Image (tube, rainbow, N blue to C red; front, side, top):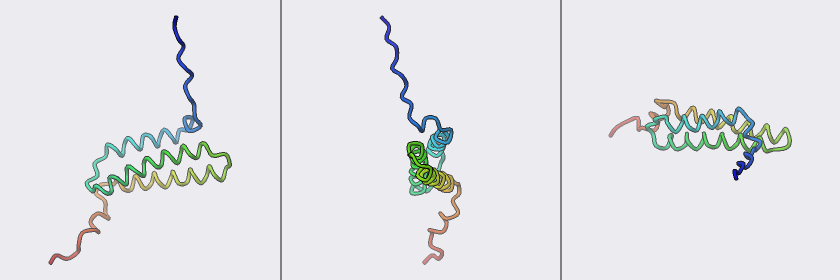
Length: 100
């Protein structure tokens, strides 16, 4: 007797191409070498947050709620990309300008 597999769970965000792109960003950021440990950690958090906000937006009911969640996801994407940029121009700014 063969059993049929249970139906695949389909959540609202599974239908979004943008969500798939966010998951790709998470994987890409994880592979990217960022010398600064703090920037690396923040880039990973931002990429994960982008995917989560995209999923949240798909589940929201009103247009305003969806728009807000998607706008946050877009900002998180941009933040992750900026933090993954190598070499980071602001990494030099943390160094003291003068040596004693």
